[in-house]
Structures are given as C-alpha cells and as structure tokens.
Length: 155
Image (cartoon, rainbow, N blue to C red; front, side, top):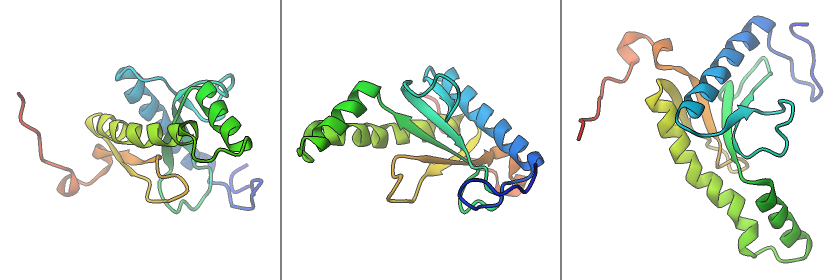
C-alpha cells in the first residue's frame, strides 16, 4: 500500500519510511513515560478521553516539517468546560484559555525531556498549533560534526 493517496489527497509515505517514523514515535513515548508523564499515540484505541502527551506520526510522503509531533491534552473535563463556555457565549472565560495555556506551559517541559533523552525536539512554529513540539530524530542521527557537545555542569 505504499504511495497510496490518503483521505486528504496527500501521497502516503512508503511503509519503510512509516516504520522509521513509528520507531521514532515509540522512542518519544518511551522518553516521556520514563519521565513520569502519560504519553500515547494519537488515535490509538481507548485514548480519546485520556490526558497527557499525544504523539502523532505524519503519514504524508512529503513532510513540510517534522515526521513526529507531540501535543499536550488536558483532562477531558477541562476541554468540555472550555467548549461549554464558548457555546454559552463567554469566549473570554478563564476555562476557554486554560487548555491552550497549559499546553504552552507543557511544551517547554516536553522539549527539555525529549532533548535530555537524545531526541531532536523544537517548538512548532505555527500559530494553529503553538503548543506542539516537533521531533525530527535522534542526536545520533546527526553526523558527528553536527552533534551538540555542550554538557551542562552538575550541581
């Protein structure tokens, strides 16, 4: 099924490419879980009502950005409160801003955890997903001359 056209008209990446992306996503999930955070694959069974780090693999053959991204999902009750406030005509209610604010705060923590685990992670530079983290690969994927050499001093 490689190079099939998915639902939105983009060419799907070959199975070999998706396998590498899925391995990277597994590594992201493992790094976040080892840090004590709930982390799971976007669209995985029984995850619709879970909160935590949501890991997404881009299935498109041509990635404009990173092959894997991570976002933070608040407790479903908080998201529901935001939707309720919006539908009730209260767009400036604190509940409306809460999920996005928490996502932005978590973005920095997610990046630091992933970087400390040897993954190349940066903030999403997109106004539609400002709380998302992009994951490009592992430090070991870089040629030796491009790998970071800075090691922070201990306490």
